[in-house]
Image 1: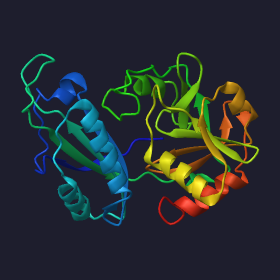
Image 2: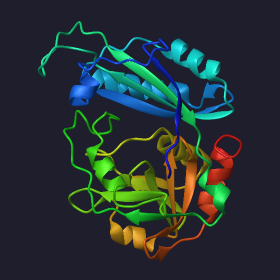
Image 3: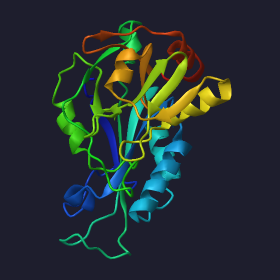
Image 4: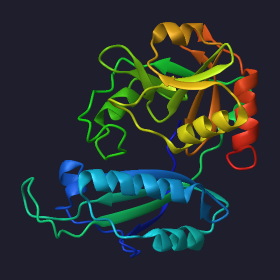
Length: 277
């Protein structure tokens, strides 16, 4: 996916886009972020993103104030029909060293960019993805599932391809499938929806949870489990999820072809149509 230009920036609610060089997000990756689709001046699933951000802040011990009103106002003020918002919260700015006072004041940065075209705009056969050599590291339980600012594995993985692929699939050191570089992964086999267990690493995506909740409510069999390359090869359908595109069908993983099957099509229709495309 090609990058898009940042059109709007606010730092701590101020339009002057200035951050201290001593900010711990810059110095140590000490912070978290959320990426949200904005439609007609409002963020999609803002409350869900806010709850995840608050959970992550709690696990990292960051005292983040309630900035939802400011975030909403900034998104509404920009007013474009479709945009992508990235909200970054850091522990704040301190002197040199890992240790910091409990009273340090967090910083937050909101950027707004043009929303990229949905992959389905280029055809309905599903996107092409690749299996990455770079692997996701197993994390301390305190960090597993948290969308923190340390994304070096994803940065290295993204260097493995140009724009011929929509995303790259990543495994853990044991060869278990975890997620896409920018997405969560789902397989469908025999009508059952399956997604990797992210207890030890990976990001628990907002749309991932929406798919699981909707499948359960709709009577679609689903499970969170360990998945390997054999399960990927045997899958009837493969799809990806994230907060920018919703549900995206996969047409090919390297040399293995897949179709846009009935389960994926149903989830796209019931969860995404009119919002993500």
